[in-house]
Image 1 (cartoon, helix red, strand yellow):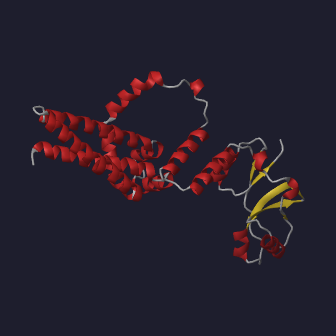
Image 2 (cartoon, one colour; image 1 turned 30 degrees about the vertical axis):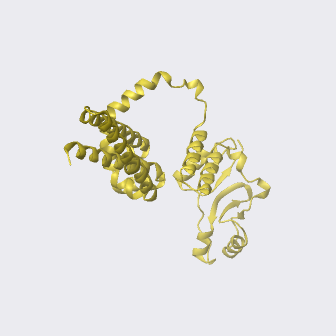
Length: 289
């Protein structure tokens, strides 16, 4: 085996590794990626790059693969410059090896074992990002005149994410039910609180003066796990009771009240959800301005 053959074999191996790494990074869920980053890269500057720009590694892998293929083509051409027939045969063999061993097989393995492949090949992808940085930067500068102007980019972020979800479903990355759930969450975030709030006449609540036994019976016979508690009337909600708290005290004493969030009917649901997650509140009361 000549040195050229060794270099070409190394090229196919590199293409296979980069292809597998890029496909794995596409296939893993953001939830898994966040968990892995927190476990492996906690406190490092690289963690933010993984979470905010995973596509940076995917682009770098693709650009590096292109560089390797160009250099390999130049190597083949120079090695078989004396015979056009030998060059064509060598090109065909190399192309077949790249397609089968460098593309099809690595993609199949990466889809099947995406988390393991992504974590194993992440250092290689980071190295590719450094190597391909000049090429990626030049490509962005060259394509800048053809980018759409802001006035033409009126598509919402939700529409873009939904397109990506549909592409992921076609690629076999996610199940249809999962995509529908995620899409539903995004559509919910676009609404205002007044659109999803339970009407006043349908609110199930418990008076604060209710005994521990009465609270346990009301919660047990209701279909709610979180129940608001009012003092005097529904206009004065003083907190909420969680069904788990009732189970803990076994109806022997009144459970402690948990705080509730408040919002106006015009508050975006996404803002309210973020505030509730930050303050760890499970129930929100809609108040008129």
